[in-house]
Length: 158
Length: 407
Image (cartoon, rainbow over all chains, first blue to last red; front, side):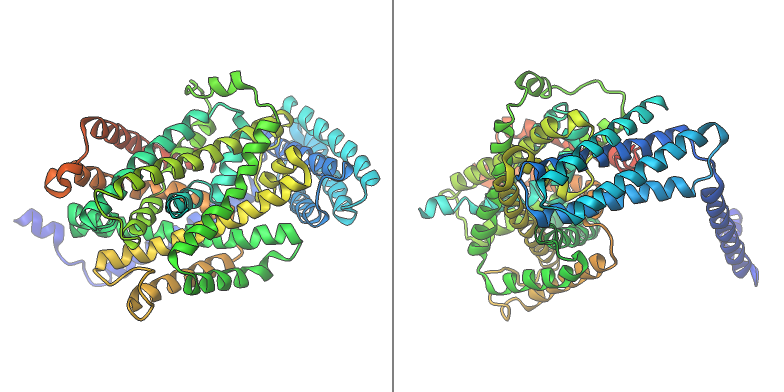
């Protein structure tokens, strides 16, 4: 009974407020640490490999989309909308890598990945602007295939 | 002709349940990442949903009580309430994703701004639900969703590697957590609880009677959900042939549409778009009704689309509120595809609490009389309860470990 009474006795005045403050402070501190870590934690090889894989995927899919235009087997409205989605995905990859804290050992390959993502986004943007020109699309297709192959090589090197 | 039209309930439940927006992207991703290696997971989930849909339809036909009424009676108020809350959260998320998916398909097809289409998509769905009789909703969305059969034609046209496909019928000893995540996701997606809530409530709505309509129930469950399974397998095959060799990791609905185009050209793209549009709209209606059915059945309200809105006002208000909540979620700008993937994984909480009472009631002769489960049905039912338990335990850790399948 005593033990139970002690365990469930009412907290002293101010205890609850103190507990809440401590908890709130702890939450703020944790959130601040997480933000700091998110901003400063260096990019790892696995993360770079993952982004290179995303760039490879986006460029390869863009090449397939351009192939549909080159062979006049698509709808320009669909090409325009989907090319924009893919270009945005490539931009996101470039931005993520650009904002990351990169260790010296990965600097060169990260720059390469940013370059590939940016070029992929540019070609997809061109496809978005000319979604019904088969000749131009054939050119975009070969460019995107080259970018996909380069991203794949980068992904394998990590 | 009427007999053929009567399988529309199974077709709509299956099209809406098996090939909704999340499944389309998820299944395409599974095929793109692992080729044919996850075919077994689709087959496992198809057999499971056929077994439980047949049981829930039989229970509804014999006892005149849909699944959620059975859940509350068999599991009691407390566990019934947990199931209700879990299934309503999943329903609202899925509804938001599906209705957002309607806007997404139209925006891709006509290159119109997606945010501008969100509110009109919800309004159109509300009008369709308000105006259209239940049996016509089944027929319009069930049969036009069959445009997705273009993926079956596309898969055949691409000459799938049958040896690899056959090898995919056997689970692989894979070290990858991503492989396990997709396997669990495919099984969970096939067994989403809202499919049996909608299906069994539809059986009551249509006034199925034992013993005459039990055969119709069996045909609906086998053909409808079997068809859904064939469509899922076709999506895997197209992705395995088109995307897997070139290393595409699908993240967008447009990628699935591109698969149909790569196989069959412009006609394939248009048919796939129409099929996806009606399948996703059908899924939105399934989930909207399912949410209203479960709440009304749990609280003992008048329910049913066959009743005039004045005859079941709380049921009508519920589906309107659910649509409103869906609109709020999608209006935040969240990606519908991501929402539905989380909804699939979240649904595992409601899986055991939904399917266990169905199995118990269907095996109880005091409820079912001569239509009680036989030994084989009981054995298969308990085997699937084991599968569901594994899926329920594994889903959330795999979601976290694999960062929702993105590695």
